[in-house]
Image 1 (cartoon, helix red, strand yellow):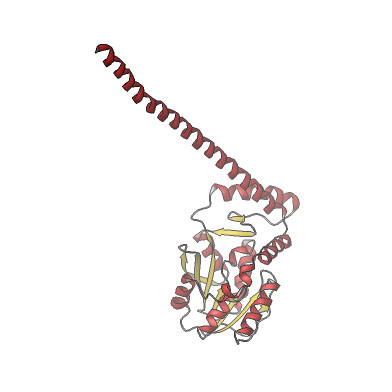
Image 2 (cartoon, rainbow, N blue to C red):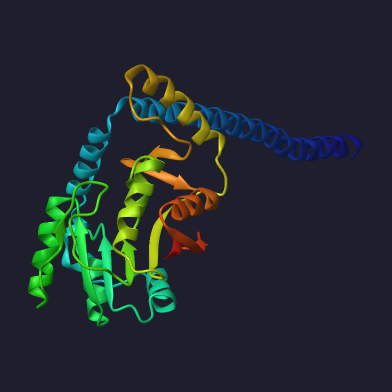
Length: 283
């Protein structure tokens, strides 16, 4: 019996010890995996930072425009009825209903394929628009004509307003377009051109990517890019600049509101839920 108990005891120990060994092996493999994952993530971040900083420092202003034009030429959805007849996004609708009540003549800058222009006209507003991408201009005017509306979306130079007569009591910069204007000075110049066409007190809506603070990534991108920009005499790379994949600027609240003020608009609101956007008022 003693021998039998001893054998049983050994068998039980063997059964209990095996899971302990397996668990130890599993823990070791898990630690190795997470260590490797952290290393891979760190390497990827370094590679991304260097790549983005390099191209922001090398590409000229006109080359960045070409990059944006090529990207939107490849994005077919912005030239479809399905996309442009979908109406305003929920957050756009709330802003229009809260801040553009009573606006009769509205200017839509960077009108794209006509989505915002069509939606606002269906609300009974008198809306005019302009767009810099020629293919989008053609599609937008074709869409408006098929909807029985005046096809009057104007072709505009990049980062500027075209020649427009009259004044507007509301301005909307099309979805995400403001963040694709490279350089604080150019963005402020664009705002001032819009301010010249807006009556005092008119609301303006901008939308963009946001960041709560200027991360180490954005600071490193600017540092790398500016080494090359100085050598090649390119525009300086500013903190918040990125390529995603075309030129994009990420805004903090402070940076966005300072640009609004210098552009002639008083900041009214800043939101980062759903999609970053801000409302200002012409001073």
